[in-house]
Length: 492
Image (tube, rainbow, N blue to C red):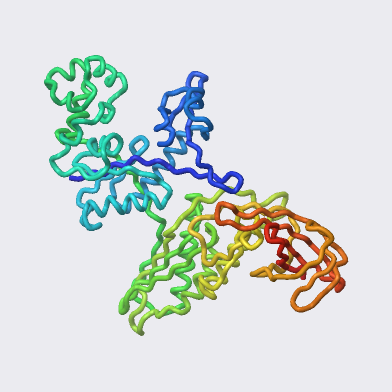
């Protein structure tokens, strides 16, 4: 009966000054009014930092670590969420300290074997941003020990005892006091414990040591408490007989949507995806899926998206038709409480209105035909915004866009120009562009914009806002290294 244990570490990359922060990470906790290390990354551990060390000592070992406060509640919540996500590998997933225990008995065949299951799990954890060490072993205790203190991989059936022999005592999941007592008599490895007479272990070192040894080698049963994932809310209506009357089906569907909205309100959540299934007696089931830009439980908005799709459904032949309707929210997200009324005036939620407009356009025109502008954290004008099509699975991190003057029309590719100026930093006197020459009457600038050096080598730019004799305001820039001039935009 294979068991899968994982030791997961969240990779944290923070952008500072336009670059990734690669400093070693140290998590600290306050113990007796003293900051001590609770956990650290592998780079810090290789340098000599260990849990329980004072932060001042860790700063001596590491010249410039990134210190983060330890938040046990957030770690537990994140692990429970990861355990729910890991139910794709097995229905029995439990949280164990800083890792997961997964019962994959009989599940490996669905993934093509234990090796492919292990490789797939590691790949998908990495895609989520986790650095995980995984082990499949005959028992939970063996998998837990090898994942943290041994060579991760697969321990064959019947090889649990051999895999544990050279591991340290901490791999048995016993208390620190028991480990210290064993060290005092010269026992440092699990193999040495197994050589001792079993009758002497409980009286000298407590019952826990013998129980953990038996659980690790499979001579004692170990149960886990799996994380229970709440099923998505679903409402249904079964007719007394099949029907092809569109009016009756429409009324029933709208009532089901209102019931679903009430369930979402009780859960303080909103739906990001709605699935409607029509069970037909003479045809295969018809499924309708509506994806939303933001979590919502507005029954009126949901019905406005579902009705056009429902009108195009083949309800079946005369005398038969739809027997059952199911409406469910397959993707649910929590919704924050908001004050929507104040002194009798209803507050206008522009973000929700924009999401409703996007949902309506995507439902009518198609998901890939509606795009929106998303601001990105880039100081280069051509990279500061990007078009995104389709609803996002997760809300993107909001980028900051400063209150700076930018042209209403930004060219996709800057157009070369010839400029006469009194000095490299201006003012600009004349401009030759698009086959014509004009005199410049007003010059504002320069505004220096540096290149994104972490992506590729590019020259720095000096931007100028100029007005020509025809009254046009143009946006020019000069490449500082090449002294070449370009027109990048115009105020329409």
